[in-house]
Amino acid sequence: MLRAITTLLVFQCLGEGVSYLFKLPVPGPVIGMLLLFGFLMLRPATADAIEPTVLELLRHLSLLFIPAGVGIMVSASKIRVDALAVIVSLAVSTTLAIAVTALVTRALLRRQRREPVAQEGTP
Image (spheres, one colour):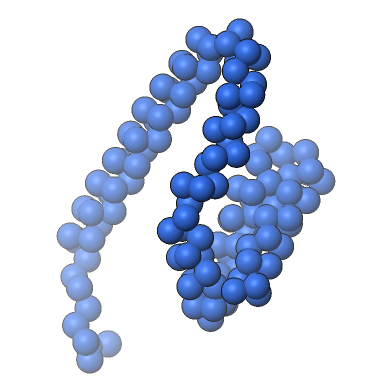
């Protein structure tokens, strides 16, 4: 478990470093997640090794939102000034995320229907 959490934190730190070093407008954890994804594609055995720990973390994912919620409550007076901008950006980004997810899902379902399923024992 410790090795899996260390792996996750190393990739998060790598992402933070890349983001800071190249002054990218993308958050470090997002870059770290992409780096981890690439690494897991190259070494699938690592995915099997970290899977139990990751699944356990996902079971308790809601607890990780508590600090963010507290931070928003503490900063409520600062956010109140830009409330309209925050509400509009949340509505637009949520709508875009749902639309993109729907389009990608539809495209993948169409692709899946077109490709025949390989039978066991056939090349």
